[in-house]
Every structure is written in C-alpha cells, then in structure tokens.
Image 1: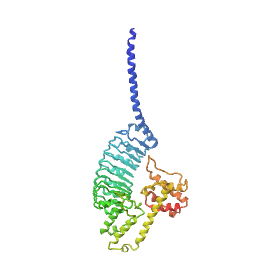
Image 2: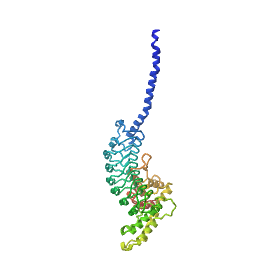
Image 3: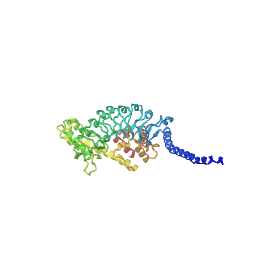
Length: 448
C-alpha cells in the first residue's frame, strides 16, 4: 500500500503539466502568424522589389530584414506605423524609386536620405516635421507630398528640384514661399491649401501649372502676371481675404479672374504686358471654368471672348497694334485661336467616341503616358501596338521609360498606317505636353 502513495500526486500533476504545455503552445501559435506575416513581407520584397510594411505598428525597421537581400527594392511602403524617424536601413535601399512614410510620428529627415538617388516619389505626409531639410532638394523627385506636418517654411534650395511635377505642402504653417520656387520649371500641381501665406511670388506665373490650390490662406492680392498661366485648369482661391480680384469676381471662376487681371494690366504703364495674348497651343481647354464657385450657373466667357476682352483693353492704349508690330493681324489671331480650339475638341471627341471613355479636363496629362493613344490605334487596326504598358493599382503611374515606349510605339504604328511624317508629332509633344495641337493633327491624319 505504501507504493500507492505517490501515484495520486503524480496523477494530480499531469493535468497541470499538460495545461502548461497547451498554454505555451497557444502563446507561440498566437505570435507565429505575426512573425510569419512580417517574414513573408520581407521575402516577397526580396523577390518582387516591393516592400510592404504598412500598418504593422513598427517603431523600428525589422531586425530580421538583414536576412534578406533588399538591395533591388524599388518601392517601400512603411505608412501607418509608429516610426519616430526614418530608419537608417531605408536609406541604404539605393534602388528605391517610391517611398511612402505617410502617417507616422517622424520628426526629422536624416541627411543620409541623399543616398537615394533613384527616388522620384516621396510621401512624408501626416507626420511631425517642423523642418524640411535641404538634403531633400538633392533628390531626383517628381512627386513630393509633405502635407499635414508642422512646417513653417520651405528650403531656399527647393529650386534644385528641377524634375518636380507635383508638390503638396498643404495643411502646414508656411508663411511665405521661397523666391526660388519659380525655378521649378516642371511643376504642374502645387497645393498650398491651409497655410499662412499672405503674398504670392510673381515667378509662379512662369511655371506650367495645371492645378493650383491656394485656398484657406491670407492672400489679399493675386499678381496681375498670373494671367499668363496659360496651362492652368484648376484654381482654388476660396477662404482668402481677397481684394484684387474682388471676391465677387473670384466667385465666377478662372476665366473671369483672368479677365479682371488682364484689365488691371491694361491700366498699368507696362505696354508689353498689356499686349500679352494666351498661346492656345499650351492652353488646355480654356473654356472649362474651375475657379471658386464655378458651378453657380453664371454665363461663362469662352476663350474667344477672353481674347476679345484683352484686345479691347489693348486698344484703349495710345499706341496702335500696327505701331508695335506691323505684321500683327488681330483677325488672323482670332481665327487661329478658334481653329486650334476646334482641333483640340475634335481630338477629345475622337478618342472618347471610339474608346467609349470620358477623358479628364486636362487632356494633355491624360495622353502623356501614351496608353490612350496606343489603344486608339489598336481600335482602328487591331494589334498595331502589340504590347502596351498600363498602370496598375500597385503602380498607378508609369515610369518615364514606359511612357516613352508607349509613345514611340504609337508613332511607329501611325507611320505603318500611312500617316505622313509632316503630320506626325514628336515624342516630346506628348510626353511633355508641349504640342497638343500637333498631337491633334497626327490623330486627325490617322483617322482620315
């Protein structure tokens, strides 16, 4: 009977040991999917070049990343984490083209970011930056989003970003734009919404802006020279204490604003400025009115009427047009303007009717990647372009190399379909949106 004594104690301990085993197994199975998910993301990045570490509550770069070859990573998404600075490991990914750091707690950008000399798109929005360092201006950026931070200024060296096409610094505390902002000769979209701007630099008038949002600032005067923004399609001015143009003019939209600025120019002594007429070859669909409250039903001025208005303003000056330029013929200028507007509308209608699509207001930017044009020639003659590079949800914008390949394939197909060389446009007319009229002529010849 003495030998039976320990047995109950032994059996009483078994459930406890089994329970501990089960609990430890449960804990490891709970953490295992998280580790596996992170390891899988790193493994996928090594294979695909796309590193997706978004929404993982990361406070630092994964230490296990050193076990994978990430040197060929071209896109990294570290958005919606808890990073307080940009990990040094990211600055070693020298092949990076796109870096998304949206919605973290980042307070500064290290100088080592300058090593990312392939970086074309940087999203540092919704962080805690108080300074945008000059080293950012040494990157080959085409898109920079630094919105929703605590910036009170932009670096004076921002003019070095000569490839920059989109700049978003909305929802900051910026009091003035640097004087070198006017050197951003490729800039098409500028968003300074909800800042503390009081004065606008005149140099912005020389930029090829298509979209300009300066709403919710402290601007009282729009410089007269801004009427030269011939490519501007969207102009947002609301919630500014505007006096020139008056608020009632701004409420009617962009065309009325430009009319007012033209009349103000005529009142000045600068004859050269007063004689300025928009070049419709660069003015995308001037009739569209994208100003403040542009849908209020008021009568819109056409591009022709705007030109007439400018002409009338010019005529009130003491010098005649003939004395300034004997070969200048106003009637011919008006006819040319009308013809070019009609050609652009024909180009839009031809593409929309054949491909059953609705193109955006900015026709030039919708054609610059060559996708629509390649689809158009394939619609006319199937498989004229055998391979078309198209955007995807993961990569919504094509690289310039793929855009150029599409455009060159389109032009080659036009040649094979009998379009004469003198009717063809050049690649830069499409890629840089510098010759929409020439593109329209090429498409018209293709359809004839």
